[in-house]
Length: 146
Image (cartoon, helix red, strand yellow):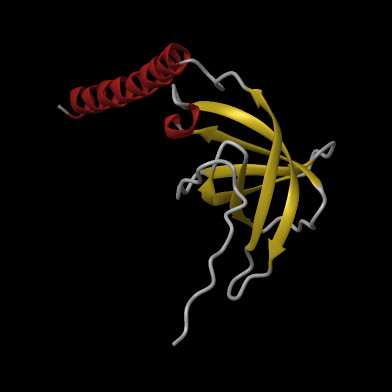
């Protein structure tokens, strides 16, 4: 008769199976790469990336922390952390990286929704103008041909 040994759970926070896009860089470096999480908590994450990392390295991970973790609104944060372990890929090129978050920096949204809408309207008006010019040229061509 075999029994599976009981394992002690060392995590002090609940982990959520969430696939969230992340931006990763070494602390103090400008070189940045991307990846996505496998699971996420308020104190750490496990994510996949092509960025070569090693245990003990200080990194910054930028992502939108979902409301299920913040217990409020989803917000964009830059997390400072330390790489705990790196799992070599069994297939493909993405490394599995476990990171412990030691701090957060809440970031402003890249652009307010109103600014995006105004930009869209400005760009759209340019395209409509181009279509009107084409229609005017077609009308002009028809007048000449008649």
